[in-house]
Image 1 (cartoon, rainbow, N blue to C red):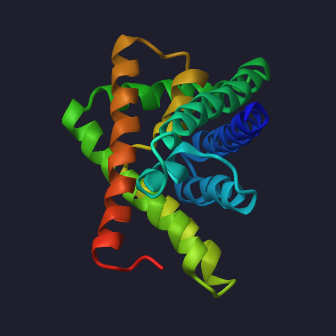
Image 2: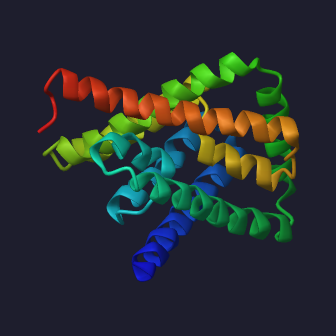
Length: 211
């Protein structure tokens, strides 16, 4: 049991690390090459799926398919994702990549100017897309279309301004912008991502679209 939990957390750390790398690229390209940054961000989710890693936004939608103790696993995933994001944030700060963490500070300012219900709604929408990306990759048989499902889902959530809790976890960390308000909004993002993902899974079940 302990060995399984260690493996679970390790896979979550790896996933958080990948999100941190992808989010760094997005920050670095945001002002001049936003479309390229949005495209490259999908690198994280593609590798998370390829390696069967534990990313909160990719797993939380399957809560209703598992036993209640899966909630503990979800909590461990969040911790692991944070540790992975923290590692990349520390490396970026130590490397003196000021263009990245300065942009992260600007990102936080914009996000904190939103009303809580805006953050919540945008997080739900992001959760929907993340579930569709992961589930779509599993279901699509065409090897060319499979990655496109993920890429389009990621680019849609980024261009629409939806809130991805783990990406924001990295932005808040690399920008050193954590405070009580930021933490409260982060919790809303976690809950919203979960609701959106679970909602689509539930709709699939009700419509009998699940295999």
